[in-house]
Length: 560
Image 1: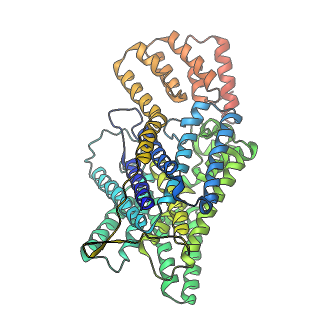
Image 2: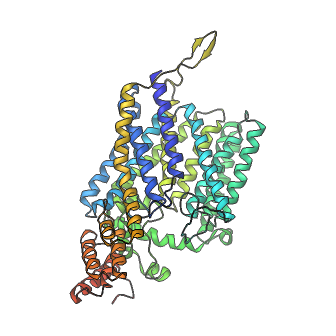
Image 3: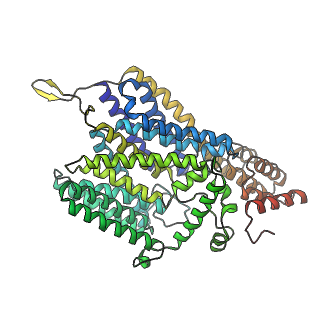
């Protein structure tokens, strides 16, 4: 009974973490209203889940979980090796760069949430997960509709399509909505579903696809189609003969190849699917691969892709996007990890992904009855993986992929033959009811300690961003200078403070902070560029700054 109660608690932590991390924003509070509150939420969820697991570690047979636990430990440990061995700024590696925040702490937090999901993944939680997905998806769709009609209550300064939801970018919004719509399709196939719920799910799908389409991003429609294809595969395998099953696979493969070729401006679908942004992604991928091959062991440092992009891009990329057409992510999660942490980190991540694939196939192979809830999880995971090949690990979206991985691995373990699945009900006044177990005092104490730890790990970027916003609005010289030194140190914030001081004729103070910034972040092109623009910089300082800019961007035709 105690194990059942703990599993239920873990499930609630995961669900809350998913919904809150996706939807939370900090308008009017911080400069970055999207990413810094999400890292705080994700790390708090991770801390609460791991604290609960540690407090109740004796309830499970860890032998069955040794492979996934070992891989996750290796994944986190190697990032600590990279932290010290890559040479990149440690603060940046820990908390990530401005606008991404996908550093060591974020990835270790996601790994922790995956492990928590493994232990929460019983049949009951698989159903609860779909409710969390529909809840977060419903809010995202509703907000997207508000943005579509021009009724967004928040004063966004967004250069993209106005339909960007709670994730700050139309690609992320479109992908997330597409994934949740695939979940809704799987649930529609539940024979026990009431007519009312069928109408609600159908409305969810129609409105979601409308929002995805109007966002201007094709990612949502593509991942939706892929998710539906997975649902169809599971259904055909459990209901029809082997001939139909093999035929479905053949048609799916042909369709996938046609879509892939069309996305790269080849084949009959090229006119429909190709976008110029695909060519830019090719530029980012080649740069990421170059970073990987030139730094095969430790990579360039966690979340340090942006520091190396200019010097890793080729002449084609420089010409296509212009000298200032840059990126701080590879737009491919595998290449992001390989460039940041070298081949070892890539291999570990591939092994994690492979374990999910094996677990997924094991469940499908031994399933004889269509389970709409597991089909929803499977389709959402494949859809997430599809978008991760062409997109960025935005925290509010990435948490779903990591949780889905944990659910598939955990569900496979939970449904193995000989593994206890249900706790026997007890009788009460002549009827059967589920046994009730209370959370132990040890667990409650662990939750309190974990809550504090989660806040200490996740809040610094949010607090710093909030203080920076307040400093800028105050116009107070001392506050602005102090904002540049807030923990955690951030290259973009220090550089921006220097530029603000320069524009307000505080040249001495601007020179001081920009010299410090170049010392802390010697691989930041923008920081050296800002230093070179100062009117009071000495000729030697300007010459050195331009030499550093040339080092960091050797193919830039504007740098002589």
